[in-house]
Image (tube, helix red, strand yellow):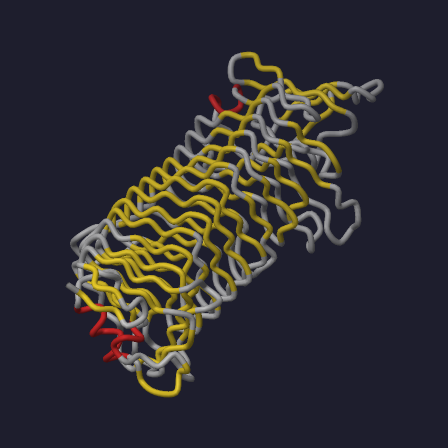
Amino acid sequence: MSLTKVTNSMILGAVANVLDYGADPTGSSDSTTAIQAAIATGNSVYIPAGTYKTTAALTPVGNQVIFGAGQNLTFIKPSLAAQNGFTVLNKSFVDLRDMTVQNTAATPTGDGIYIQGGGNCFVTEVVVSSFYRGFTFKSTGSLQINRCYSTNNRSHGFLLNTDGTTPTVGVWIRDCYSTANTGDGIAITGLVTGIYLDTLELSLNTANGIEFIVDGSGAPSDFLCTKVVCDTNGQSGFLINSGVSQCYFNNCWSSNRGSGYNFYSLGTEIQVVGGFFYNCNGNGIDLLGAYNSVIGASVHNAGINTANTYDGIYVNGSFSIITGCSIYSGNSGAADKTRYAINLGSSVTNGTITGNNVVGVFNATKINVGTTDGPTLQNIANNIGYSSPVYSGATPWISGAGSPEGVVTAIVGALYSRTDGSTSTTLYVKTSGTGNTGWTAK
């Protein structure tokens, strides 16, 4: 039987109220021992409205709920720089909810919520701020993180990584914010797999919105990212490094004017379906790895601050697919016009560019073909706003207004019909080079 002073009742396994164990809700004295005593009962623990100073990480036992009165009512305030707010080591079925955890030290080096090992844990409606990292999940699995907020931390808002051998598997982060952190909104490092990110805002972070990093333990893989917003981060929005594989981005949104990229993929089997990518300093989307695809995305106003330098979508890998996209440049000024709607680099092989709508103000060639790969050239078709080449075997026959010299990129042997030509300037043959020069009128 357990006596609770707050309820004055005798109930087997009653919720342990930290006030009954001597916690100070005014924040004047150290409540660490009192809160930990309530946790040691093994029962669910209630932390009423108030401010609670702590000087050591709170360490839940397994199969335990620890809950406050609400994000704006219950405040856990660690006071030491190296201190975590909560540390959950090799425990399962821990449920933290309804509170704010805020470090008060000048230069913190600890984490707000640190979970390593174990699994089947839950964090719901918890605000974490002013730590080194907000949330760290290491070599754990089956976590559900719902409606949490990580802000003003000295490094990453969320970090998912491993101990070097055991992967982090099956983490669901949903309806969360990670903003104004000095590192990434979310950093995913090493052998992390089977992760679901749904309805997130990653904004105003000094580094990247979300970054996928390969390390000695392995590479992140098998991610499903749905409705992830990256806005106004200092470096890149979405940054996917080489070695990362099988990540899928559905209906995501990025507007990044930092020093890096908007959506940048060096990974393999990276798929973007739908979504909106706009008003960025660089290219709207960069696909540099193999088997990358963009399907049905909207890309608007890439290279907004630099004229004729950046592209809506830049591709320079093998087996890439760009289809059903709307790529628009409304920047008619000399200072900010998008260069090409789609730019195919020289390393593109076996690409497919079909059914895209390329409208607005671009260079004369809305789709720049920098590759001489035959299969790719034959798979550029049915793009609204662009006159696709007609092929005889692997030789393109292109038509358009004006001279192709210095404008149209093609392989030697290509033919160009000038729709506004006259005697001796109606038919051109590509006689030299691999770029947009070397055209000879016939």
